[in-house]
Length: 334
Image 1 (cartoon, rainbow, N blue to C red):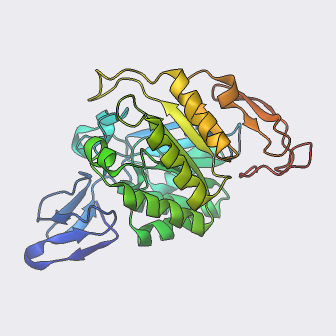
Image 2 (cartoon, rainbow, N blue to C red):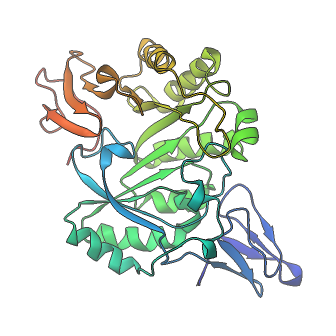
Image 3 (cartoon, rainbow, N blue to C red):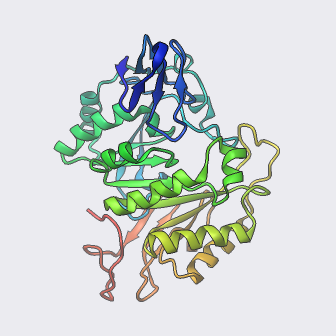
């Protein structure tokens, strides 16, 4: 175990975790909501430091990142645990389990760097579960990766406090935030969290200058009404600008929402059209086969400049972030 960052000691060997907005007060011997930060005799310890349960090579597009070194692969890494309890979690077997019940490997931060070099990947991605809960491990890997000129990306729910977020932003090159809804009731009912801390995180990431993309999983009957979608789009544009890529992705029945229908393609296309009409420059549809919603278009000439087949980049016409027409396309391209 490794002593956790961001906590304070209370009376009677209690501690309060200050990593995320749950601010768990944890009795001696108990764990917080994430299941992986334990009070051991008045010290908060990480139970998953150096113990990844998943490590694999993926296309960076799968995260999804469509404006971050397209066509490259990323070494994805995760530990058990999450600070949310989403009813639709596709990785619930590792995110919602106690770490002792999840098979894991013992891999140091330095060994993760060696693996990235072995597989000749230029990106490490903290993904699959919520990287906030393995913050110390992510931080140490990212610091070593930065020295080796390996890029760091995180796929997160954004439910993290300001101080730790600003500190990790100094080491991250790209962040994809899963903005699940603009409705706080949805967050409480479906995710076991709150939306306002996520919105604050999005603004902080923007201020810190880290490349950001946003994913919104549309679930029928829960967050698929057009009023909420318009409200979400409006918030993104008004607070983050027109150049943040937005990925509207399809839900498929899983975990505790097995009786919920898959997302119809037409609602994803409607959401994309609404966002484009509102002025967003880069809007995508995901988890479905949609050529138009999968490609990147130049905001100047409107022509396709990155053509994809699923997660595969078929053609990339960009040169140093510019289209042939001279228009600039926002992103991290090399």
